[in-house]
Image (cartoon, rainbow, N blue to C red; front, side, top):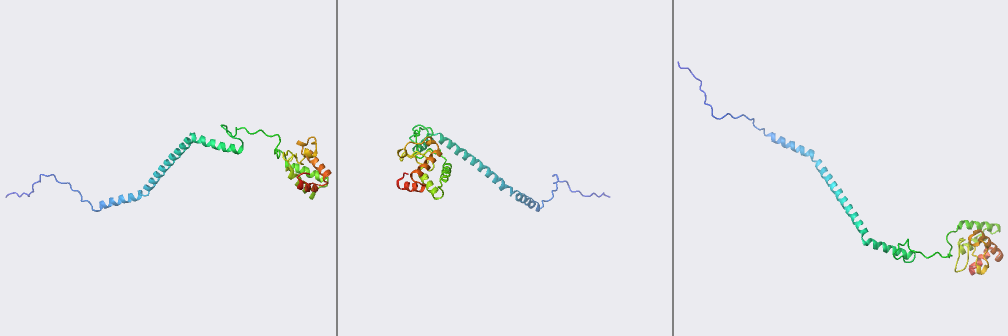
Amino acid sequence: MPTSHHSRSPRSPRSPRSKVPPRSPSAGASRSRGRFRTDRLLSPLRPACGSARDRGAAFVEMAAVTILVAAIMVAVYQLELSRTFNNGVRQMVCLVEGPGCGEQTWVDADRPEEPEEYEWGGGNSNALENESLAMHGAEQRGWTDTEWGCLKNLWSAISHWDHTLVNPTTGEHGISGFNPARHGSMPSGFPDSPSVQIDWGLDHIAQEHGTPCVAWAYWEDTRTY
């Protein structure tokens, strides 16, 4: 009895293919969603980085402009233009302060020599102290209130209480307005002493006019007393 053999199919000469599981249609969509999420997380950082770069560029530009302006200013100062401008200012100051300065600066220019006498004194008097001294002398003579007001008006008009006064127009000297052409020889120490000037003036008013108000009225009419 013939032996039964199981039939076998002949082998294919090709090597069998490895079985790869089919790609799930949802895998690509999952990766796309992952990239989308990443982009959303990084998106707030991108404008910040760009803004920082813009600020840095603006700072560099501002620094460059500042340096350029400084260089231009230095160059202009060193040019002849600045020298011409300075000379113009110097000449204007010379016209105001004194004679033409020429090539000198206005602070170096020669000024006229100080006159021996000033029209309204040298500015070295102390008006408040002089007025207080005169008030004390007037009180001793009983010249208070109205009489003191007349005396104050008189000597304020004559000298502004400046004991250095020498008025070349009227010839008056000192607080009380001593005039050599009218009053004779000047008392000793008169030019430098406010007290001598005040004492002379009080004595002169008492002898010539009696009271300060009479002397003041006389001065208003004649500009002398």
